[in-house]
Image (tube, rainbow, N blue to C red):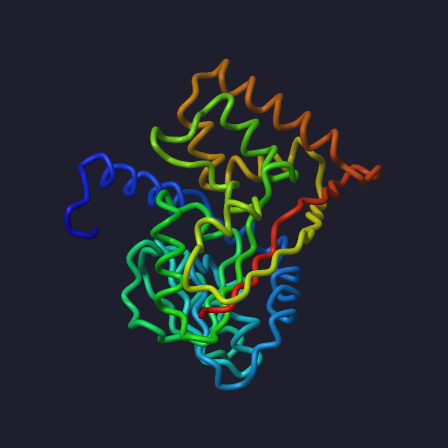
Length: 273
């Protein structure tokens, strides 16, 4: 934790870290690994480029980046996810450095990377202005900053809103899905960016089980959902489960007992000045 942090901030960071350690995010991330690879392909990384995957989770971006021949580092606040990422890289014979660390206080030198990428990760840090500053700081002039952020109106944004009705965000924490609003992203990056483009993209979640079972899958494996259920009494859990099941069912495109849901995100491509 950086010096000068308040006790409230220290407690919030500890709570957020515990949230991402909870469950097993790898069991969520694997359902969009193909689309994470597509995100990397659109960046057209070159062999030898130095790439940082911020809030890397289990390596959904770091591994396909390494397959391009780039020199890749991944960093995440949750040590269990870092360990999974290392195992996933080892299983593929990929040489990727994975570190435990905080996006708001990265340990890397200024201008150390040609590309800084993050998918559904950095958006969850509590101080977005610091996140933007750190992403810019570690990216070299002329380098690339690429983010994938859930939008407020997309499916996952609505899932977060549904959960927050029963279990609100911690006091003082901005909604993570504001990173999915173009105007907000432009404001946060501000100076130090020579070009910034955004584009709405889509993740298609395909689960081989029913919407009700998807809710249980998230409750068991997805840290934020697990923590929300854990904070509620029996009646509260039943109400949250009902609302989430209705949301997944209402958006389900499948008719064969499985679940297929489209989830919008904002792709952000910025060039460091």
